[in-house]
Length: 178
Image (cartoon, rainbow, N blue to C red; front, side, top):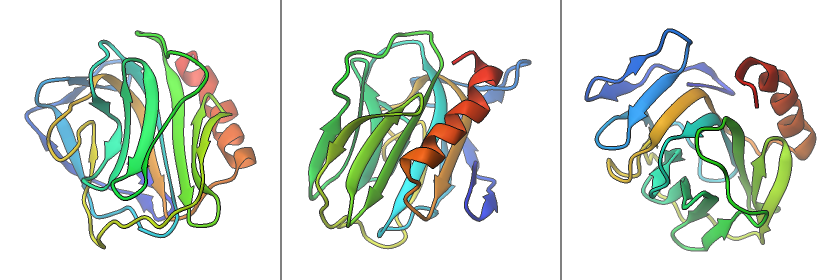
């Protein structure tokens, strides 16, 4: 996992493995990673390059209060005290790579991006997450597992702007056929 403060090692649970092509496959049943307490509560960005095999309540980078997931092909994110935001531009396709991102700040609220484009926004609100909340790659509190692949994941202790999200997409799109 990469981000503002460098690369983080995290605890893999239940024997995930990297493929020969350089991405991580999670089985949707019990595979996930505990990233530790790396997500701040005031402003942040979560980003991943993902491909789903099945639509279920599939978490990308989530904690108990700061959730970021896809359900029925719709990207969603939110905090327990402010509700959730849903992608407004239709359904994401199965078996296709996407760069997805969630940004948050008390000033700008939540913003969701798919392939470098802003797809949904919610007004600002307080986060309400307790300090030190663990973030999980591919799970929400060790449940609602991702069924598919991760090629990249990052968390920043800052809200990246639309230009920075677009630049990340342009940088990563050729590597994964996005």
